[in-house]
Length: 169
Length: 286
Ligand SMILES: Cc1cc2nc3c(=O)[nH]c(=O)nc-3n(C[C@H](O)[C@H](O)[C@H](O)COP(=O)(O)OP(=O)(O)OC[C@H]3O[C@@H](n4cnc5c(N)ncnc54)[C@H](O)[C@@H]3O)c2cc1C
Ligand code: FES
Ligand code: FES
Image 1 (cartoon, rainbow over the protein chains, first blue to last red):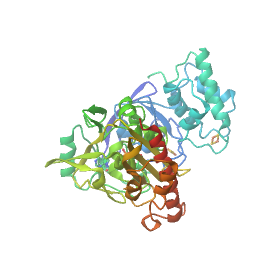
Image 2 (image 1 turned 90 degrees about the vertical axis):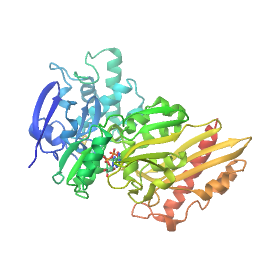
Image 3 (image 1 turned 60 degrees about the vertical axis):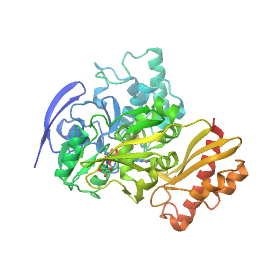
Image 4 (image 1 turned 120 degrees about the vertical axis):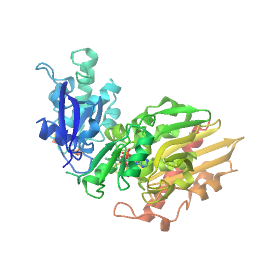
C-alpha cells in the first residue's frame, strides 16, 4: 500500500507522518493524532460535525484527504482554549446553553470562529446563514445563535483576551 | 467512510497536470473535491489515481482583462463571494456564490470543478449561460475556447474531453443598461438548486434590447430559456409582459422528476424563479 509523507502544523505543533492517500483528514486527526474532539456525524458531507480550520478557513475534514492539507496549519477544537481559559465562543456556548448532547458543538464553534474572523459583529441572520452547514439534532439552534452573539459581544467588550481564531492564525 | 485506494499526484503547473493525465488515462482530476470526494466515499466513483490540480500555479484568481473578467478554474466559491472585481463587473456571480452549499463547501469548492462536474442541480451553469461566458480548455495539443452554449452537453457531461483541463472562465463585464439576477429554489437539506434561473437583461430607451435567461436544477443540464428571451426582446418590460413571457417557459417533458419534485412542479418552479429573476434584473439595470 503506497504511503506519502505529509507535514502539518496542528494546533501549533509540527507533525510529520506517512499517510495513505485515501485517509481523510478527520481520520488522521482522530485516529493518528488522537484529537477526538472533531466528530464524524454523516457520510455525505452535510452535517459539519467534522469542521476544523485549514490555514484559517473552516472546512469539513471529512471531505478532504489528509494529503491535500500537506504543508497547512490546522486548528481543531482542542486548539482554541489557551492556558486553561476557554475561547470566547466556548464561553458563549457555556453561558447561553448552546449545547445539549454536544455532538455538533466542536463543528459549530469552528464554523462560528470562521464567521467572527470575517464579521466580528454578525446579525442573527448572518449567524444563521454562516451555520447552514452545521446540523444540530438537539437545541433547535436558538441558543447556538445566542452563544455566537455572546462571543461577539464579549470580544467587542474586550472581555476575552483570546483572539477569535486560534493562536497560529 | 473510506474510499477505495488510489495513487495521489499533485500538479504544480498546467503542463505537469496534462502530462500526468496523459500518463494516467484513468485518473481523475481533483479540484476542491466537494463533488468528487463525497462520490468516492459512497463508492460511486473509484478512480485508481487522483491528480490534484487545486494548487496549480496561476489557476486561482479573478482579474479584469479589457472588457472581460477572467476567473481561474481553481478559484473557490468563497473567492467569488468576496471578489470586489466581480461585485463591480459581474454582480450575478456575487449573488450566486453565497447560495452554494454552506461556508465550508464554499471554502473548498471551485468554479472550474463545479463547471466540469456539471451536476444538473449546480448553480453556476445557468449563470454562465446567461452571461455568455466562455471556457478555456487546455490539452497537450494546445488551448481551445468553448462558449457556454456548447459547454453543457448532458447530465454530468461537458465539452471537456478526456486528457483535457478546464483552465479559465471568461465572462463579459456588465455594460451600461444591463441588469443581472439569480433566483434559486434550494433543496432544503442539500441547498442544491431544485430550480434556479439566471437572467441578464439590457434595456434601451424603455424597452428590452437583449435578454439571456437560463435555468438549472430542473433539467438534465443547464439550458437557455430561449422562448422567454424572445418574448422579452423589443418589449416594454412591464410585470404583465414578464408574466406572459415566462408562462410555459419549459415543458415538463424536458425536465427531471423525482421524489423531491415532479417534472410538472419543476416546470412551475422554473416559471416562478424566471419571473423573479427577470424582474429583479430589470430593477437593477442601470
Ligand atoms: C454539502 C454540499 C453542498 C453543496 N451544495 C451545492 C449547491 O448548493 N450548489 C452547487 O452548485 N454546488 C453545490 N455543491 C457542490 C460544490 O459546489 C462543488 O464544489 C462543485 O460541484 C465541484 O467543485 P470542486 O472544485 O469541489 O470539484 P471536484 O469535486 O474536485 O471535481 C469535480 C469533477 O470535476 C472534475 N474537474 C475538477 N476540476 C477540473 C478541471 N479544472 N478541468 C477538468 N475537470 C475538472 C473532477 O475530475 C471531478 O470529476 C455542494 C457540495 C457539498 C459537499
Ligand atoms: S462528518 Fe458530516 S460533514 Fe463531515
Ligand atoms: S447539541 Fe446535540 S447535536 Fe447539537
